[in-house]
Length: 72
Image 1 (cartoon, one colour):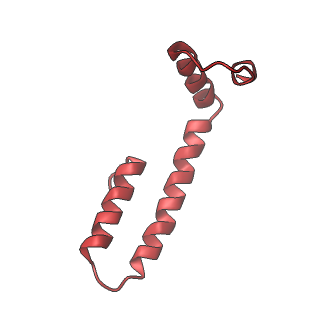
Image 2: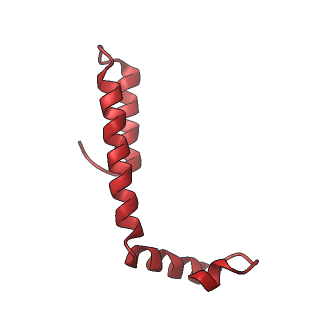
């Protein structure tokens, strides 16, 4: 991966697939998913401080669920 990132030209589609596979094998995708879920939980805690179930709050929670790719 270091060799791929160390050059000046853009990645080919095949190289992008290789890099994505290397990141997943190294645990990067799983780490990013865990971090995203932790940040979303923090966001929900902040939103929960709002006293009303406003349409904005509901929309933000739905957007967060969509971005992280989970069902609540």
